[in-house]
Image 1: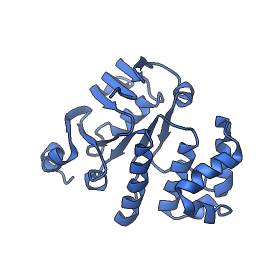
Image 2: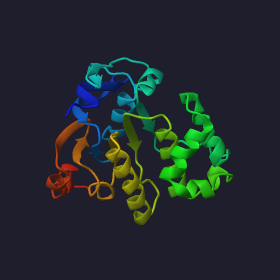
Image 3: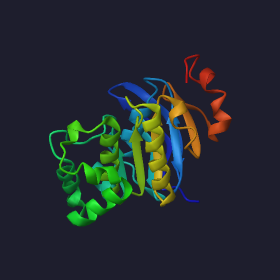
Image 4: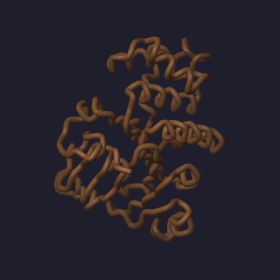
Length: 234
């Protein structure tokens, strides 16, 4: 199956400091790829490079098999790359409905944006007039995912979906992510805490100090995570 998103020998830097040292990673349609690693490994930078937010120093970024290296973030977004950053990316002082209606810039009418959101996350229909900042953490993450789905993404980039949430809520969110993937969307998800995502991922890669130490089937990596994290807990 052809990759919807591929990184080939990607290097990236902040000023003179290289933080990604030749990343090779691909995401196929309908698959969930987990990018794991300790703090400071370069996971968020990898997502930012994939979304075009951070420049590639060398190597190539491909989207649907076509070279997208250096393409502006807004053009990558129009081509189907959707980044949901750490912190959920919702507007806390606006209502759920207004958060959703902001996604009409994609060309979808309001009713269609709401239909996408409420069919996937019915709880949002019950919260539609509520200020987004007063939602629970899990509901805010659902709202962020709903906003992302309104862009009709080919690939969804998720940064620390589990941050600050109870394990039961995280499992529910990853059930939704799995359903989204089954609809044909490729998903690349960054997680520091591997246990949150390994049961849901189709493929996993472990990033340490800007290099992918190992990648493969999640179950094959599970027992090696502690040593791959350089002795830290997975």
